[in-house]
Structures are given as structure tokens and as C-alpha cells.
Image 1 (cartoon, rainbow, N blue to C red):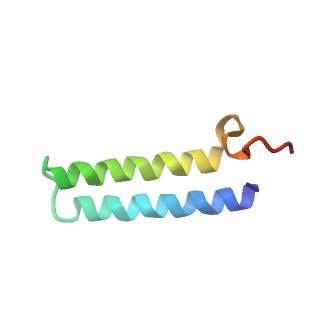
Image 2: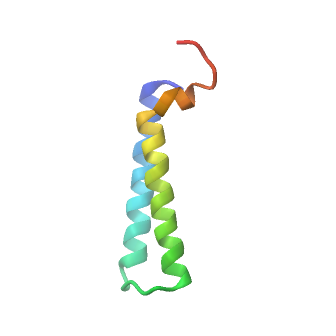
Image 3: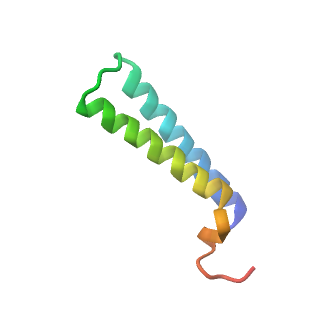
Length: 66
């Protein structure tokens, strides 16, 4: 996967995480199933954004030689 496409996908995942964070805390945060699921979605979005942006250890190369 080329670098420009990886960075574009990272921006999309970051935007997803920001929207989920807004939705989760917009009506107040309580320790309930829906808010915990929202926090999990935010963490997942930020984690995927990091993986696509940084490509640690050539994870997204899928065995292709550069």
C-alpha cells in the first residue's frame, strides 16, 4: 500500500475516532454499556490510524518488496 493512501486512510480513521468521541461524551459520560462501547470504538479508531500512519515493521506491505 503506497504512503499517500496509508496517510489518507489514517486521516479517515482519526476523523472516525473524533466523531465517536463527540457522540460518546456529548450527552455526558456515565459508566454504562453504550459509553464503554463508544470508548472502545475511539480506541480502535486511534489504534488503526496509528497502524496506517506509522506502518510499524512494514505491517501493511503484505510481503511486497519495495
